[in-house]
Length: 198
DNA sequence: TGCCCGATTAACT
DNA sequence: GTTAATCGGGCAA
Image (cartoon, rainbow, N blue to C red; front, side, top):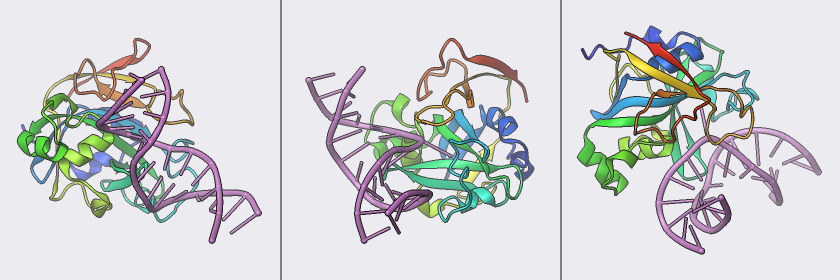
């Protein structure tokens, strides 16, 4: 148990990495939980920040895999991504929800919330709970304060359309732990399903 | 320089 | 279901 994700985990296609992250554990300074929802973004995808080329904000996406890309959303929230594939591919996986497991009391305090279900159920919410900000943009995922542990059991994965985008809305590139109550939104009946093992 | 709008959330009606 | 909050990025001029 508790096998760290090797950096090469991220040196693969974003649509392989995204479902493989479901069930893995994400900790930031020893606080976090099990990843239950992610979305894949590739630079050939009009909804991706990297679609129109490299800028100051998205520069980390154009770098090597295994690093954190953190950006500000709606001028208010922070969102965490894991950079995938190889140099220049500019693809990343957005981390959208966790099932809290470590440091729940601290996360409740940061979020000002009692309901465990809402602590990390959304990209902005989980960054607030884990205290991840733009200051952490570009940090390596295999070194503290990040800690990523591989899942140790078989999981059922659902997928469907991504949330909150206006371009390429039909692409089913949101992946999640089937039936989890910590999803930011449930998966519709139309979504497909994959069984993935360790 | 100005303007539009977003990979969101919480508080409303 | 609807909408305000809030501000930097990206593009047009």
